[in-house]
Length: 79
Length: 490
Image 1 (cartoon, rainbow over the protein chains, first blue to last red):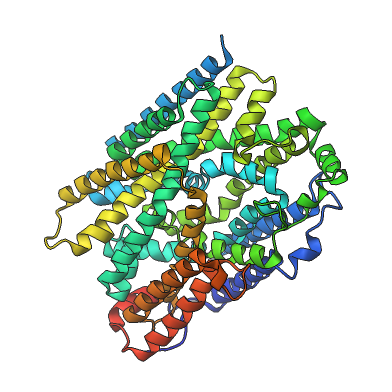
Image 2: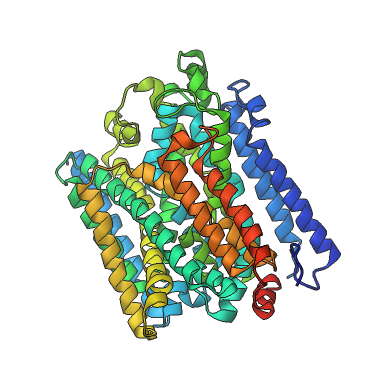
């Protein structure tokens, strides 16, 4: 039996695999965005964007990034 | 008419509407356990969207989150941060779990893991963790509901009475319709909550400061400006550390889609596409926490010193000259938040307790009919226990609930390994779960033992969990290749 990890079922096409890896990369970067040492650089109040403090806009941006990345992944799935 | 009376009438109408919505769908689903627990695997996008959204947003969203923003400032962004990344793994786990559920007849999370790892102990351990984590969760929802009804009625309805009335309604439709009752009511409740939250979150800053931007400008210029800088404050008013914030985000994000009542909704989905689309669209629901936080921030300068901070929303309602009808609607929205989580937890807790706990240790197998009645019995018993705590206990439930997150996160490595690591074995999984839970509990109750005091106890649990999973699995013979293949190739 294989001792490594097996992420895809047999027959998953190369483009489908690539898309998933791209998503995982985006997701990992977004997660990093919300933690030390990146978030502290964007954790302040100024500038207010659309009236909201920068630290809040940063989290909302993370939510939107994951949303659009997932949407892209979903629209590319085999029907 | 008196403000409180109008508001109470609105809440009463809301409760009756919920009851009707909850009972109607029972006529459409089969009388089997799959019907009761997983809605015959038939949920469409709209219902599933609100079930997932509403079961995540509870009393905590309407009372706890504004209170958190009000007293602890930017630390409340943590709630948005873990939600941002926490749901995405479900895009991959959910459809796999759904396909396996359809093939093998699973309706709970533990059934899936028990089948893969061929271990009754894993099942019983998961049942204990789930029911243990659900009781404080449910108690909080009841307290929230009781609090709302007692505040708006000016104490004419006591907190205990308020909790009793609200949760009698919940119990009736959960007993009657099972998960479909939860689905339809959550759709109704979800729409209601979204509308109320957006309205109030934009209206209150406008009314008190002339808009959202002026509110934050005034806050930034005040002596409270520091609270707006992430990671904000701890409950004692001291600054929260980045180690504390980051590790709490990791643990909560991993635990997020592992909550058994959320995970098992994958079995109720009609198809993989429905489930995937639900995960994709989930952030549209989640963003409703933004206006909720604005409600809390709007109180900081206008009404300093409100204690306890969790009462800031009802407090604001009573201080501003709002129409009684509006107050009633807001309170009904808050009740919706409490009930839509409470029903889901109650239903999941009872299903898991019976199927994964009792049925696994009972000497005789249960018939489908006996099982359904046992689940209903446990619905009543769980309600009674949670009600007891809500009515008579003063213990700190928020602490218990946060502790539960560290425990729930320990399920993540098992689910991951079940799907993606063929070499994982039952003994490895059992050792990992047990070790992770014990380490989590030790560092929770004895924080002085932590090597880094600020780091969340769940991280220490995972630091024991993952090496045990890998080490013990590699030291024990591989599991049955057929079963493993069914999972890794699902």
